[in-house]
View 1: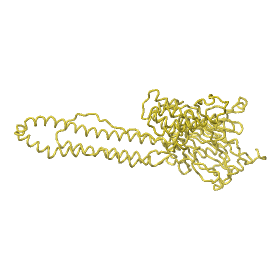
View 2 (view 1 turned 180 degrees about the horizontal axis):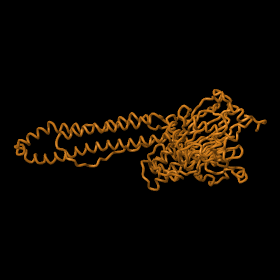
View 3 (view 1 turned 120 degrees about the vertical axis):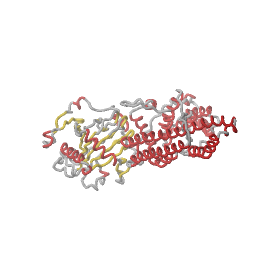
Length: 581
């Protein structure tokens, strides 16, 4: 646009001031050069110790992942321990520096007292042979030792380590993913930026707030993605916190720079003009804002000229500054998100009367005749049931333990190419466990077989998933549709006939499994499992089973699932006589 000159990276980012350490004074006397040499030895030993600690801490993380930390809370816990070790290493470095400065200061104080005395009567002072000897010794031995101490760079090891390990830190992709996760939670659970900024989320055990600079980072992340809707929301939050007196490195001029362009992109020319004028009042030399002001005024004048002669100036009144969330690719977005909030659930009294609890023995399976499982109806048609006490806490912890090193970004199958790829609508990490990995895997597989009455011989491996920040899996089908006939061709076991989903953790808020077409919502409960058939008895897909994993608002969600396939179930679940059986 002529006169506007906007690019993807506009505006320029502010660089935060570098942190500076302030060393407190210490008072420890130093007598002669052997103390300085001893301190140098201490420096060397201490440096080796905390450098080793740092290396051990970070290489423990390296064995897992090199990016995409935000997609798994389980993996992000490693960062907590690594950061804790980093802080300990930094404190050890500080102690070494403080000890060094204390020795140097003590030496300076001692030399100041001595030289003030000797300089007052040089000849008289040196008349004493011991003073003459000590002067020669100090200048030949002690001062050079002090020089070595001062020149010793005790930070070199720490800086070198950080430089090496920086490649294993969370990346720009992680920061962007984390910001998007907060915005996803904001939209799904209808949270305003002020609520998130104050950390007022249900079920939280710890207090957490977003500073002015944090909120500015959120708005800037949205801006860089071309998401002007969230840019406006978060930049307005920054202004609100600045107006309340909160301090930060972010200035109002920076905020107005982003905000004015974002509202312009949302079609609010009047407010863009107003914000640009505010920016120029704060920074009259802002060159780009001056150009934008002229451009906006020109557009506004052209708009006035197009007005019909009988329209009044009221038609040009400033908008309400309330912007609608853009429509996206998911047709059932509103229904899906309302179910995630527990709204719009179609569990009517009439339907609820058809839901029962019972003891389930798996068609008189011998193992379940002795110890049947508690079964509860979650939905009548299609029939969705929940089983209780399916996995013990010990089994859950063991499965998480063996799955965690194998966790990788969860993928989806491209319906056109059949190739597995990552997608923004599935934010989690998963791993696949074989029975040879641990006896507990085989034990859980047998248990699912006994409960369902289906064979696991043709089922897929046990998949374990851990959801990250705002972790979700938007509405999808577990079975392959007619336009995806080759999805499971390589397995040679037919389509996915049923899904068995184990909840391996409680979730403080969010994280429900919802069925948009049914209006059903099932909430995670540790140790329970839900089961449903994806295919009708005729082999046709049951499109009512389209389901989703809602974003985790607060908590850490672990699940495992087993997908049973058609082959091998012919006599265990016989075909129906009609297409809709």
